[in-house]
Image (cartoon, rainbow, N blue to C red; front, side, top):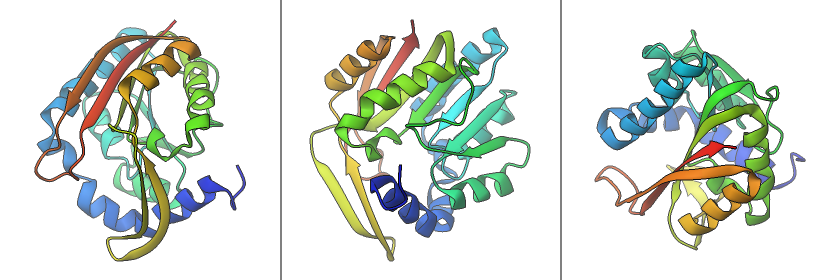
Length: 214
């Protein structure tokens, strides 16, 4: 993906807000018991496989760090070099890589499980299918994938974020459509959850899908 394409704009936007994002979001798991429970499922899956967990769209590394604190070997991957730099600084014992969801910097079958929390929302609709194919590629057979996204059909555009000039779109997604694309990509969807936003979150409904690579 060219730096002048949509991913280049997403990359530049997250580079711009990276430090403030860490300050605002870096401790969010403390107030998200459902997310912690779902991440615990991935931790158990990884423990059984002996392979690492991929945190796809890892941002400042808070999810990867949480997993690592519980003995999970994690590799965080993010589009934004600034986010990767902060993640490495904040979680020096965890491996982080810079890369795109459409061209993941990982070997075939490298991971026993993967999590992508609110990262596929920055993909165009036509990019979801190849992104899920990439996720399947880097997972071992039987590996679990946890996705989280905003529910709906709107596209929310930001040109200002916490006082910073950005250019980024947030694509809301429908669970049934995402589940269908995962199935087409070679996953079996095992669980679906929906919830309202927590008080500290943006006012959107949230969807979670837990899928297993065939």
